[in-house]
Image (cartoon, rainbow, N blue to C red; front, side):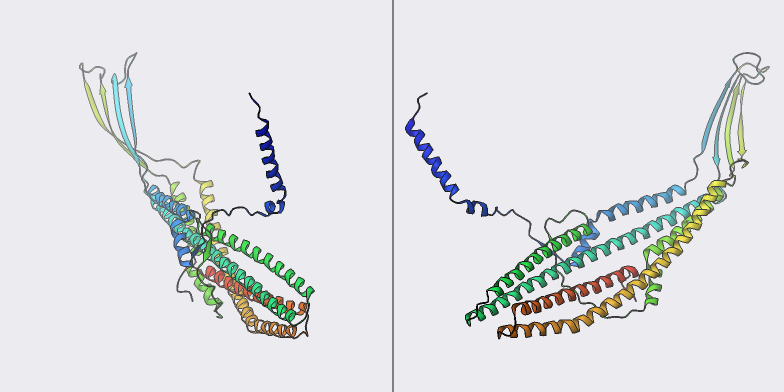
Length: 441
C-alpha cells in the first residue's frame, strides 16, 4: 500500500484546526442548552368534566360494580332447594339357598324438605347483604368523589399560589423602576441593586417550587379521577370560589347525616343481615324430614314357577336425630356476630355525629378567620407598601424597608390564600360528612 505524505499532512492540519476551534470555545460548549423535548399541552378541565370522567373511567368503581353483582348472585343461591338424592341397589344370589328372590333391583328418589323456613331466612340474609353491599358501593363512590373534589381544590390553590408569587415578582419590577429613577436623579444605590437581585432570586426559586407543587396537584387529580392516566398535565378551568359565610345548625346537620349517609344505611342493613343469618342458622339445625319414593323388582322366587318375577312400589320417610350436632358452635357464632353488628352500627352513628359537629365547627372558624383577615390585613398591607414606595422614591427610606414592605404584602396575600383554602376545604369536609344528597339542610 502506497503512503501519501501530503494527504497525511493535510489531515493533521484539519484535525489541529478543529481541535483549536473546540478548545477556543469551552464556554459556549458548556453553556449550550439541550434541545427541548416534546411534552403534551396542558389540559384545562372543569370540576364537572372531572366528575364525569370519574364516573366513567374510575376502575375502583368498576370493580365495586362486579362485587355488587356477586352479592346479588348469593340471593339466587340462598333460595335454592337442596338437590334430590337418587339411589339404586341390586342383589344377586351367588351361593346357598336364597331366602327371597335370586335377583333384586330397587331404585329410590328422595328429597329433603326445608319446611321450617331455613331457605326464606337465608334468602333474606342474602338480600340484606346485597343491599348493604350496594349502599357500601355508594358510600365508597361518595368518598372517592370527595377525594376528587379535594384534589381539584388543591390544584386550584396551587395555581392561585403560583399566580400570587408571579405577581410578587412583577411587583419587584416596580421596585426596579423606582431604583432606576433614583439612579437617574444622581444616586448610586449599588447595594440596593444587589439586594434587589437577591430578593428576585429567592422569589424565582419559590415560583419554581410552586410549579412543582402544581404539577404534583395535577398528578393527584389525575389519580383521583382514575382510569387511564391523562396524556397531559391537568389544569383547573374553574375559578377559585369564595367561601360563603354561613352558620349552619349542627344538630339539624347531624340528624340529616344519620338519615342519609350511605355508610349508616349499609351498616343498618348489615345488622339486619346478621340477624337473618342467625335465624337461618337456628332453623338449619331443626331436623328436616326427607321423603322418598321408588320401585323394586325381583326375579327367581324360591318355590315359585320358573321365570316368576314381581315388583313393588316403595315409599320412605326419614328424619335426622339431633343427638350430637345441634349447631351449638355455629349458632353461638352467628349470635355474637349479630351483637357485634349492632355495636358497630351504634359506633358508626356516634362517629358520624362527631364528624359532622367537628366539620361544622371548623367551617365556622375558618370562614370567620378568612373574612376578618381579608378585611383588615390586606388593606393595611397595601397601605404599608404604598407608603414605603413613596418614602424610598423621595430618598427618605432604605431598600430594606421597601423590600420588607413588598415582602409583607406578598406574605399577606399568601396567608389570605391559605385561609381561603382552609375555609373551602372545611366546606368540602362538611359536605362530605353530611352525605351526597343535593338538598342538604
